Length: 438
Image 1 (cartoon, helix red, strand yellow):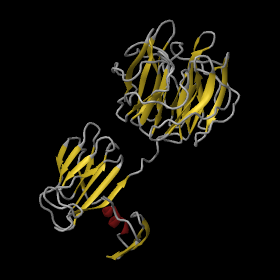
Image 2 (cartoon, one colour):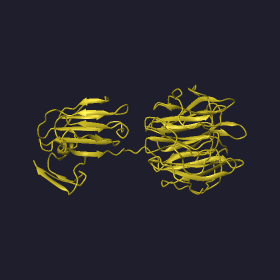
Image 3 (cartoon, one colour):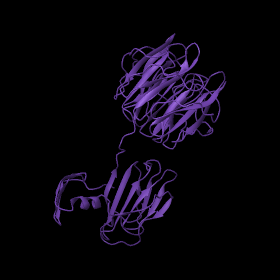
Image 4 (cartoon, one colour):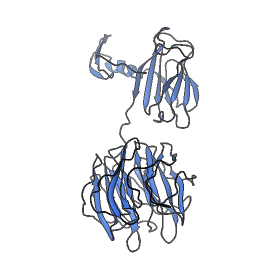
């Protein structure tokens, strides 16, 4: 179904003169009552109902409906009778119609000229649909069928790989542009180390934390929204290595798991000012050499790892930073894996080592569900890192493939497709960390 398109439209009446563009935007307007008139044109005159989460509902003319399909699709039955000019509007409340869409049952009346034997489905995240009844011939007609932009965009434009081991610990960093281009080495700041973790905080900044030198560490290094790494901040919580980190709650982060003197489930929350909190008793299986990423716009997930044997279980992180108990793993059991977000609200685990080195990938839906293995792209390897870039894309980089340490990268599209190898830039190394910034 499509909305109003084509030539520009001039509207006159009741002292109002307005010109609409091809997408319905107001180009010019004059006359008393213009604001009120266009508030009504955008659905402002409707009686908006409470959020609808059911799998079925019956719509009433004159109402607007927020349809939340996080848990299930929704079939909407329109009124059995209607009068010319009746209006109804439906909006994707949780930006989830792409996963669970809506089906409109026109209940005996026509819908855009077709009778109700035709399926009327909408399945795009962020969609808004406004319909008017035009009479028996064409019935209900959508005058707005448009994806509403996710504003402000939640993703960061740029990324950073940092630290690692190139036969000895290093603190070198490499910035990632908003086009996914990796820069040459930038001299590192802070203690050189590897098997650390990194995540975002504050909406546009990042933090590296913990890791291994000749001992396990707990210091952290903040990353500004210009990609500048700060000097060491005295560590908080248990020193450890082989941990993972991700963002949650739009502007905060979490470090979790790792290996101090034994496998751990400890987590440390990061405030939206980059302050690391003291230890929180962990949940789930103690392990190290796992990965973590964001999903659903404001939640996170830890996955895979090593307990003395390779694992594939995951642990979801709520938008309040609460870690859930183990979820039975999906896909190849492995460790020294990496993960990042993509597509605004989804995630991806990829690569790693188990019985061999892999380039296997497992996508994470915007509901935190991990998909089965997909054959990967590029060089199979482990001990790599990943982060977001360009607001809705990702990048995997560096690592080790049973001896040769590498610096190649693999881009991830906003549809979760991993590209073939891109020639590496900068110091070849393994066990770095990565995060994004803006």
